[in-house]
Image 1 (cartoon, one colour):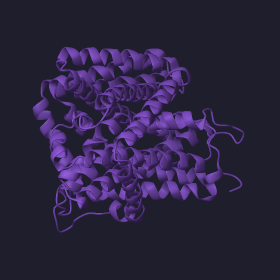
Image 2 (image 1 turned 135 degrees about the horizontal axis):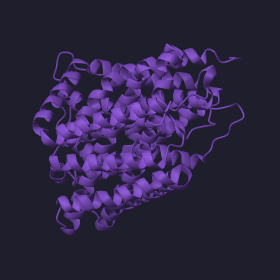
Image 3 (image 1 turned 120 degrees about the horizontal axis):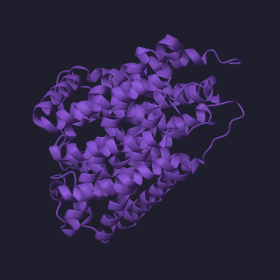
Image 4 (image 1 turned 90 degrees about the vertical axis):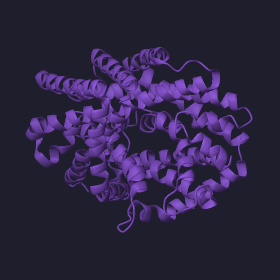
Amino acid sequence: MKKNKNMVFYISLVIVALIAFFGIVFPKGFGEVGSAVLNFLTTKFGWFYLLAMFAFVIFVFTLAFSKYGKIVLGKDTDKPEYSNLTWFAMLFSAGMGIGLVFYGVSEPISHFMKPDMGIVPGSPEAANFALFSSFMHWGIHPWASYTIIALPLAYMQFRKDKPGLISSLLIPLVGEEKAKGPIGKVVDILAIFATVAGVATSLGLGVLQINSGINFLFGVPNNEIFALVTIVILTVIFVWTAVAGIEKGISKVSNLNILVAGGIMLLLFIIGPKIQILNSLINTMGSYISGVVRESLRLNPFQDNSWLNGWRIFYWAWWIAWAPFVGIFIARISKGRTIREFVAGVTTIPALGSFVWFSIFGTTAISQGPKIAAKAVESTETALFVIFKQLPLGMLMSIISIVLLYTFFITSANSATFVLGMLSENGDLNPSNKTKIIWGIIQSALAYALLLAGGLQMLQTASITVAFPFAIIMILVMVSFIKVLRQEKGL
C-alpha cells in the first residue's frame, strides 16, 4: 500500500515539476502549444462539453428525486459531522473561492461591453445578457459537475468503506483489482495534476488581484518582492490551517470567509442601486429558469461560436478540471447526509448565493454606465476597485474586498492541500502533516514562479486540457454509481 502511495505521490511531483519547468523556462512556446490544444478542444468538442455538463445536471437531480434519494452517505445511523452553516461555508469557499471576487464585477461588465448574438454593447439588452450569462456560468452547472465526483465518493468511502480516491469510483465498473492497478493510478495522478494546476492558477490570480488592488488604492509598488511577501504570508496561514485539520482550521476560516462575503454584499446592496439590484435579481432568475435548458445546449452551427468557446465552453472545461479537488473535499465533509439532502445543499444553495452575488456586484457595476464599464474592463485585476471608486464608502469596500481575497485564497488553498494529502496517501481521510506541508509549499512556489514567468495562462490551459479526459471519466462514474446503487437492499 505504501509503495502505491509513493508511486502516485512521486509521479505526480515529477509531472508538476516538468510542467513548472517548461512554464518558467519556455513560457511563450509552451503557452502557444497549450493555447492551440485548448482552441482545438473548444472548437471541435464544444458540443461534447455542453452535452456532458447538461447530463451532469440531469443526472444529479434525477438521483435526488428518485427512490435512492433517502440513502445515507454513510451507515444508516450516521449523522452529519458539521452544522448546515459550517458545511455550506466550507463547500462554497472551496468550490467558488477567489473566482467570485475576481469575476464578480469583471465578467458582467465584459459581457455588457462585448455581448454575443449581435446585441448592441452598452445597451439595456446587453445588461440583461451580461447578468444572465454570469448566472449561467456560476449557477447550477459547476456544482452539478462537482456533485458527479463528490456524491459517489462520499457514498463509496463512508457507506462502502473504500479509500477516498477518484479511482474508488470505478470499482463497481471495473472491479477493485483494476481500480487499484495502473488504471486507477493514472486516474488519481490526473486528479492530482488537475488540482495542483487549477489551484495554483487561482492562487496566482489571487495574488495578482490583491497586489493590483493595493497598488491601485495606495500606490504600493506592484513588483516581484511584494508578490513574494504576499504569497509567503498567505502560504504560512493556509498551510497552518490545513495542518490544524478540518475542525480546528479549515472550517473556522470558511466560517469567517462567509461572514466577510455576506458583510460586503450587504454593504454594497445598501449603498448601491437597491431597487435596480432587486429587479435584476428577479428578472434574471426568471430568465435563468425559463432559458437554462436552451442555453445549456446553445451552439451556432452556421455562425461564429467565438463567444461561446471563449466563455461558456471554457467555463465548462474549467469546472470539470476543478471537479476532482472540490468533489473530494465536499465528499470528505458530507458524511451522514442523504443523497437528496446532499444534492439540494451542494447544487441549489451555492447557486443561489452566486445569483445574489452577481446581481449585487454586476448590477452595481453596470449601473455606472458604459463609460465607467469600458474603463473598468481594461484590467480584470482592478475592475472591482475602479467600480468601488465611483461609490460612497468606496475605499472601505475596497479594503474589505482585499480582506475577502485573502480569506478566499486561504480557504481554497487549505482545502486543496488537504485533498492533495488524501490523494497522495491512498485516500486517507486524515493525511499526514508532512504531506500537506509539502503540497502547500509546492502550490505556492508554482504559483509564484509562473506568476513571474507570465505562465499562469499556460497552467490554466494545461488544467483545462486535463478536463477533456476527466469528462469521460465522470461519465463512467455516473454509470458506475448507478450500478452500485442498484445493489442497495430494500430499494
